[in-house]
Length: 263
Image (cartoon, rainbow, N blue to C red):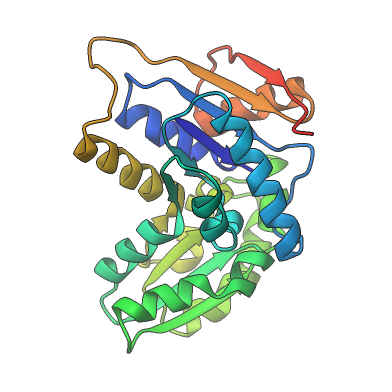
């Protein structure tokens, strides 16, 4: 199986997938040399996504989790029409989960500028719940906070920035908030402090659950008698990736990481 993201955030989906399917070999590609995707044009995001997917397909993966909300909201139609392997995104499962979780029909979405600009969450939510109120907010400073380790309650910078972004959504009565960027799971406790009783939907985790369930239903899951192997690829420094990846994966285990050139 393959998982890709523009950088480190997709490791949250990878981690959940590895827990659900410990017998699977999983290849992770982080396009760390071109991160972030969220500020790029639609055409550039699609080109990067096809290069990422092509890399994994050429290594024989049987299915791919697009653990990037920006790509999931922009490039899925192109990916599915270009490659023959099944693709799973992190948007569809998050929408289903949010629709099932909301009590008042008021759903918030936070994500990158590209994800919010696409409007994909609002469209998909209203297909399920036509009367839903959907409030979407671009939060461009949250990814740098995560990448710099500013993720814990009590960190004044993290709390002030997060509060400024979420104040409007809280005041609108949002009772279910989709974390529409896989980085944001690392800020879950800070976000919970701002949103009080709101249900938080981790798009990376529910996307991984969607993929695992589909492969089991299709009968294509790996033999349970074997232990899966995990391989990591990046397009920039392996040293920087290893150091930060241990935070996302919540492990001190040494990672097998290789630098690759997608061109």
